[in-house]
Every structure is written in C-alpha cells, then in structure tokens.
Length: 166
Image (tube, rainbow, N blue to C red):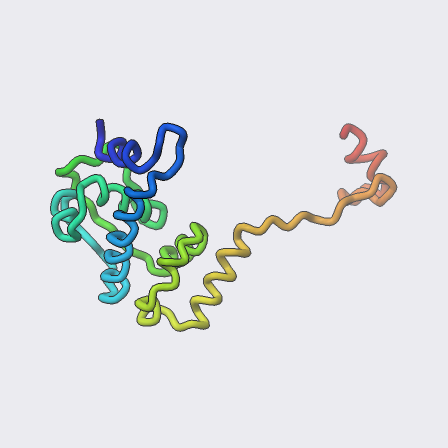
C-alpha cells in the first residue's frame, strides 16, 4: 500500500468521514510548515519524502498529505499514489495561487496567518479573496422569452428560430 493510501486510510473512516484525532495532530504540523514558508518567504522546498518528514518533524504519510494539500498550486503536480519514502519532492511555491487556494478551501486558519503580512499587504489579500470568491460564482445570462427576438440576429422570434427544437 502506498504512503498516500496509508494516509487516506488513517485520516478517513470507511464512510469517508474525517478521523478527528488524526486531523487534530496533523493540522498544527501543517500550519507550522506554512508559517515557516511564509515567514521566511521560501519559494522552494526540496528533499526526499523521508528528508522532509525529518525536517518538519512529521511522518512520511503526513508529508505526503501536505504535498497532496499543496499539489494543485504546484507547476508540476505529483501522482500521490506513486510517492515513496525515496521520492524527490520539489515544491515550487507561487504565493498568490497558494493564498487563493487556501481561500477556496475555506482554510481560514491558513489564509489568516500573520506571516502573510510579510508577503502581501491587507488590501492585496482582500483583492485576492474577492477574485477567488468571484471565480466560483456562476452568473446566469438573461433568460430569453419565447416571443423575444432571437439572439442569433435572424429577426425571427426565438420560438420560431433557435428555440424551435428545445
């Protein structure tokens, strides 16, 4: 079984619910890594899974969980099931993408860290939050009535033109 599968088995029950004691242990460790990355303005974190686990005082499964959490903002994504203790990890960090992803995941404990102050000012963070929230908002166009002119420009009523076969 892969490190990722081991993590998933520990962190989630068979019904798919989070196992609280695992997450209660993991989340402060994850937060410490982000505090380090943001506080030191680290653009790149590199090493094998085992080396990173030792460096950040985590298990190899927890490091794989961390990589899974940040994977979507990396320029080159990792196949989580393929990671082993010897796998070389190179996390190239884009702070803007990272911040927006934290907002998207509603990870307030991470996007509200004081270390963000050294990366972006408050106004920029507000702008990023608004951009992220708006990017997930679906805006429906104005509904076309049956007797309205067809938007294709034919001059016919919608019901006799593009709306005929609906």
